[in-house]
Length: 179
Image 1: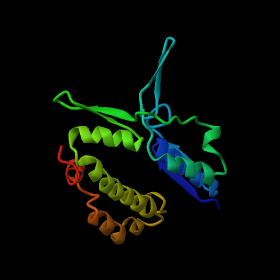
Image 2: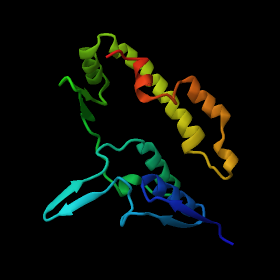
Image 3: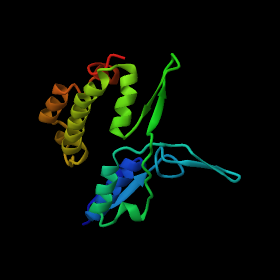
């Protein structure tokens, strides 16, 4: 008898999970409360206009590429991902702004406008965030949870606690940057 799986939510994560399970031979049913799948990745069409209503910045594209590769497909054959430059701009209450860029020298120059020490602090921040991402990918995102006990992973939780990865974002970022 063929194994079956039910996926609650047809967002990007749910669809990736469904695709992987289908590739493994499961019969998959996806339940989505909205009239279309895609989660926050939607668009509104009215007259001759199209508005994106979802994310303008897609993160964790490596998960999408890995999912398509796992299914024997090439993501680039289906979706044109465009590298944004700059990524985005943050405006603060005091009217100051910071432009976030993937171009490290540009971003460091932006950080230096707020704090001369910030570009150097960014290296440690980025190293710690990268390590937390690696832990999250290896121990949670890319891991199968076949039993309820699989959700309890003390070793991974301890690694994230050591990096303070479970603290509030403001508290975490304040360890590296003062302004």
